[in-house]
Image 1 (cartoon, one colour):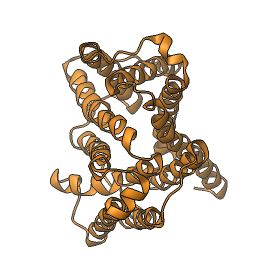
Image 2 (cartoon, one colour; image 1 turned 120 degrees about the vertical axis):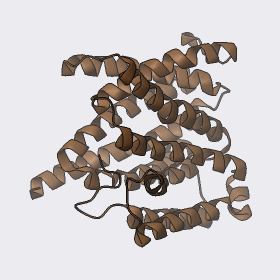
Image 3 (cartoon, helix red, strand yellow; image 1 turned 180 degrees about the vertical axis):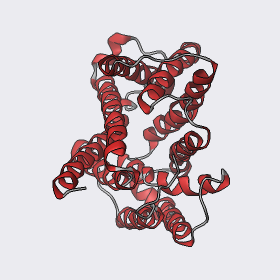
Image 4 (cartoon, one colour; image 1 turned 30 degrees about the vertical axis):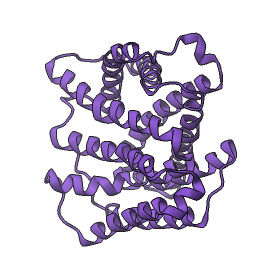
Length: 301
């Protein structure tokens, strides 16, 4: 890459990190008035589906539907949205947004052992050390002193980690079994549509359906903004991987965590005890150790 390209891609990466990071405090606001997690997930998927439909129309690409693509949509909807968002929305009620942002940095660290289990990667002592440092950061967060100072129950901190495990699994599953010839935008579009259809009966049966008119308040607006930001950032992330490569783009993890904490401070006025800053430092060290070297990828495509 030329120097101009590096500067441009760095700017794009920064915008993606800022956009991804702002979804963390927006999620906190969305759950602040008692909206059930199934209702929130349903509308998130509906909004994402509408945006993806428009993006697909602009790209001039349809959505192939057959038994192979439906299987891809189902798997991605389950481990990419339904399970992780159920955990995230419930944890967001009890855990500060800044802590949620820090825990997101565990995704590349979780991806490494999953890749080893699926035989997609080879053992590396350096990256194993990175995983260990990241887990040490989690332990610092759940220490009695830190959790009591932040009013973050240990149980819900651990529940929040479920999302990171799911996202790490998602990337490796795609690397292992592919996407039936679909590109990333088509996969997200199909998974959003199928996920919305699948979660609607559960939402209605659980009494958690949110009427459209109830989305006009601050929690509903926060949900819609988070859904729009997520869709646009995802599309931008896919574009950047294709232009700058996965090794460069994976560094967005640092920015998501950093911006997540910054947005939580600016929007929610959160403050953190010293233990949280120590955990953040450990997470950054862990990400640095676990990220792939140049000319390698964390999970082969």
